[in-house]
Length: 431
View 1 (tube, rainbow, N blue to C red):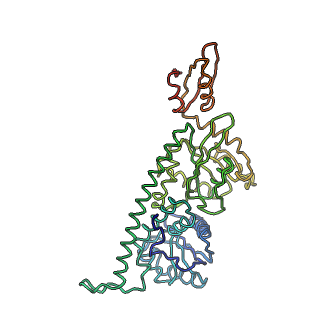
View 2 (tube, rainbow, N blue to C red):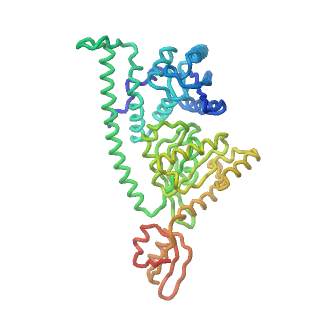
View 3 (tube, one colour):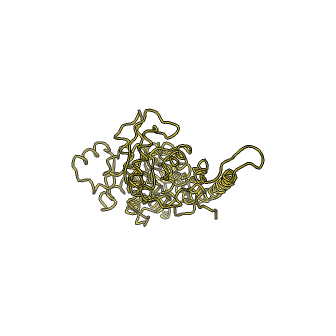
């Protein structure tokens, strides 16, 4: 098994407990959006186990190459973090490697950005070998241009002649080769797992069952919904990114064929693109599913932003055009009638449920059953009257619109999966 330990650029060799958050409001943004993003960042660092001592929103006209914000604002942020006895400054925006080094030199503190926070959360929550490898690859690629952060105490290159390289330069070159070898090894291992996953998916597709992927913003209650519908035992926590691995369970549908439901990793605003690439295995489940179940947290004030973010990520992975069933989850926590009316007006076609109390789940299953046949054409099947085994197959795997018995034949008009049609090809007639 590959070595998936952290690279020399990892900055958490000492425990970080207290953080000062920094949000940036540019000319195209608004203070309200910046504060909303900071609130989400606070939940992210809380998931890492940090406590937040303070926060600053920096208004900028144009990003500066040295600190992203102006030098005066940088001094103000550092003074605030020191006064709060913080161990770390956390930016909601992505910092370049040089900006990160400049901030750590200025403050003497650990300085990280949203990208690194999400990487560390993923590292904490990865459980399967594939998820561990995906996180390790993303962290290695992120750390590569930042290796100097780990070696600021070493000497620098003093010149270009043979024998004049400093200790730091030699160590950095060695670390760079180590990280590049790890990246290559992680990619090879992931390619092998991808081939194994394709074989498993092919086996699953050989079973004539439709597959729906549960997607949505992180912490919307996707895993809770999967557990409530299927009796699964997927881990559930009131934290962001509690689930990273795709989990597929079978849903028994009364008076209909069963359905496969797949839980996927939650989406989030400003999701780093390397993580979209790294977690394509779980996101692929959305791309190959027959249809999507998009779950929203009905109680979250940022529900519209979360919906837009989810649709944007679905667009990135090529799943935006799939038929989608909207689900408003956690309705048991919505008591305000005006809020209920607003949700109904904004999402008129959504199923209203509570995975916690079971409210609305029966109606949701009925809608899931209707969706699985939405794109399946009608087929006329004429069976010999003695072929009760084939008639049972039609009943077991299809949706029957009409059924007629005569002395010699059984005539069905039904929607059937391709595997069933393959077995019945001698008896298929056009509708």
